[in-house]
Image (tube, rainbow, N blue to C red; front, side, top):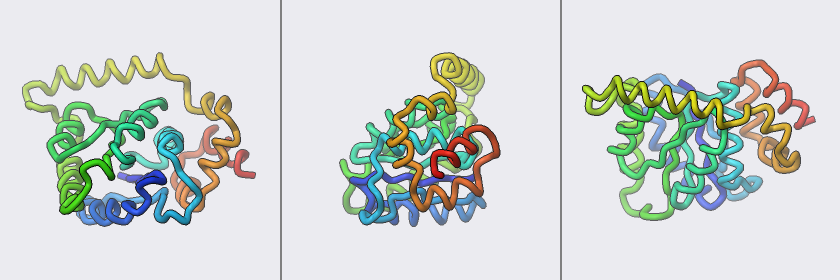
Length: 211
């Protein structure tokens, strides 16, 4: 699994904490981590809305399989990510949320609040969240006897999203081009995206944007 970290501007100083909490779990599982910033406040500004756009691009090109993001409360980033097709982002507060999201909702992104309630010992909470999130294969159900109806509902939701959302390439062509350029014209994005994204129309369009 390829996991992408996206940290918006107000919480840039938490990026290293997030990475260090995720790293041992990823190493144990054999997962790869790709940091899409912000790794410092000196970087070009990245808003939670841009985090959503990045997530849409990364998930729809399979540059990553899962995204860890967030903002001050976690709410804004969750809403931004869920604005894009094929992205299913949950708001995670504690390890129980993380486990239930993986087993019932089977999403591909989580948003965490890195300001509200984030204090002494919160790096341990992050570690426990990541442990429970990736504890076992997604979609096992909870409780186990509810697995089949939960899986059925997840499939129905996926099918509905295919109807209610535009495809990602159409979105990229209709979105403000300056906003798109500012979002993808980042060192981490260019280093990680082009080596991991599957070949196709979205990848080629991003290349054109960055020329």
